[in-house]
Length: 184
Image: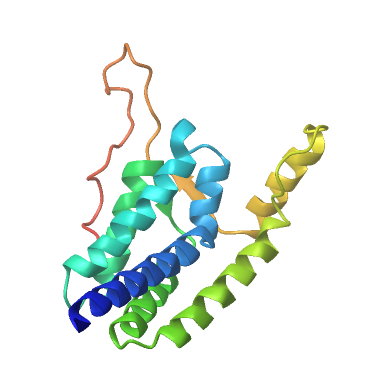
């Protein structure tokens, strides 16, 4: 029965696409800064892993995605999960890279896909040296590293301050929904 082997092959290659999504998102400086600085709360890393899953599912569920649709989707996820507005111009690059991976996957260009993933993960390993896990003496030297990454890296801002729990939102903050609709 060739059906069984085809199913196995497509499951394996789908896993490869998921790996590609993981490589793209985990090397995206904005997401890294959001996770590293706790913008997603204590479960920031789990949220980043969950994003990999929902993003690859989004590609499988939608035919002929346009870059702007992928950008909007990623932007919404970052906003909802990490209270982060992406302002460094990286959304189009990340979206196009994901679309390239997906088209390689669709065309069955798995060697090409593997090569793209390994290139991305090499870049990630390079980045990991900047924010190495804190050692025993995690004090001022660690803060200096974070400052270094922030000053040279992308600009990331929290999308909305959280007012104190016991206070109504009448303190002058502009909440989501203000401004022109996305894509204008």
